[in-house]
Image (cartoon, rainbow, N blue to C red):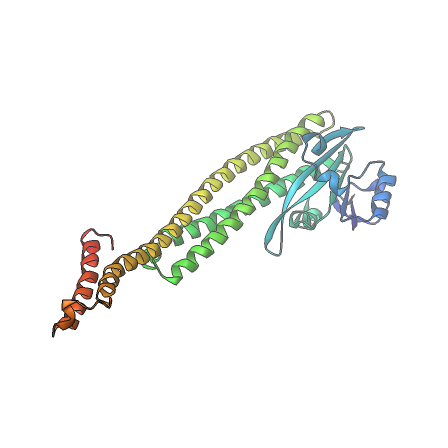
Length: 322
């Protein structure tokens, strides 16, 4: 899909005229015909999806014939699962071209706000900086959501209900759900970190590579944006450490629950060995066994069996093993 925006009456609005007059050209999952049209009317090479997914810095940040070719990872959720999708930016002094191969809520929200946004005519850099600010704001919102979910999991794991539920099926279900949620949060944080690193590379590169024609009001905004990205990276590190702590705590509780089960099985096996030994002895069919001629031989055997079961239980209780 191809969308073009141009300045009309002091604001940026979607236009259907020639692409040569557009300040912003957005390509979403473009067809070969759309790519050919943009290349023909703008004179710029449109990168492919494979080129946008390159991880080398020289591929993600480049200057060709006076135009800046940039790419970064954007976080999106497909069916509630986080995904990383590459987005490309081609910046010239008077135009911005964006290339995407997946939908992005950040782009959709920014486009919806364009009629109320004051953007100088012929400045693609203002559009790029506005998009980067929207991306960073979205990252901050996602990190705040992760923090809230981690606090919820922390309260749930270390609550008194967890101690009261020890050894029950409810505890197993709670720990399993917490482990799944923590894994999902870790996956989301990794995608956010990848997007943050991309934004952290683009901001100083644009500030340096476009210094000669960058509007004078943008360097302060880029500097603030760079500080915001750095603070989000620090916050992301803190959340990763907290997530790792909660993950270790959850696995520790799972190990405790497993040890409790093994302890019960061990006690049962140890308690059952002496009675089985006594029953085995008196179950032998030898001709001369004096207990066979006793009138109280059977009650005596039962008493020995019960006694040999009680003595290990008493020892375990005395040692506080059960």
